[in-house]
Image (cartoon, rainbow, N blue to C red):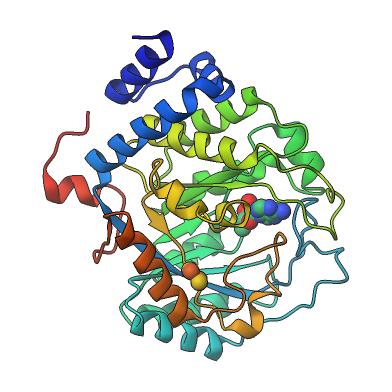
Length: 354
Ligand code: 5AD
Ligand code: FES
């Protein structure tokens, strides 16, 4: 057994890797295939063959922030802004439910039009449909997070983007890394299932800082973590950056996350499929167990352009639902019909993870 094989086998059994070991595995291309196969085994043992679907509703692309990587940043005057009415959001949630989704993810830029009161009303109405609600609407006060929780939201997605504080504050001007980390802490304390994650391939990002991202997620610990390759948007300051290594590196980050956090939910992110035609399926075979198909009306999809080359711009919610099911079945997996809470599979299957 080679040293790499030994290291990966040990991680598969103990779910522990040191910072140095993470760096070794992230940087050695010989680890790739071994790592993906090990993550696939750990995924099967701890979360099973079921793939959880979350219906994504992109309800506003107004944003008060100015992140240098993001296509809907405040200063992008070419972005055509849109905002769904609460009624339209509710209708989209109804459509998601008709299509069999158990969870909807309400995502937007940080749009001040949606006050806490308005959000709470939307949450209450969607909750009445019996859907699990995930919010992905950025940094808010602890009181606001508490109000959404009270109204019925159960999950929250807030990527840390990078744990490199200097890089974060350079790329997200006006924002504070410690404030973002505090938001994650607040969400955890308020009883949300917390999803975080990072962007992979940011200019200036190092293998050391990617290893720190993984250790950060383990330390919180997160219930879900989405890893997305950074894809430069032409109307942002980071236009023209290369994406050469972002796909494989993102896949490695996902696989390592599965090794060290064996039973969390890991989405096969949409951005993976922008870089590779089978991106989400490859991710599902390298540790991921969740997909978030878009249910947003086709009129708005292309305007929610965080990065260029977004998939499914011409397809509607029904087509995406059918498409993804076909792809999942084609690799011998199936759509899971449970709500997909963290740890649910092990509880019902009584297997020992560790
Ligand atoms: N490439 C890939 N992902 C991006 N995001 C923002 N801009 C980009 C980009 N250029 C991601 C961020 C954010 C999530 C909603 O979208 O990680 O948290
Ligand atoms: Fe949208 Fe395949 S998931 S077309």
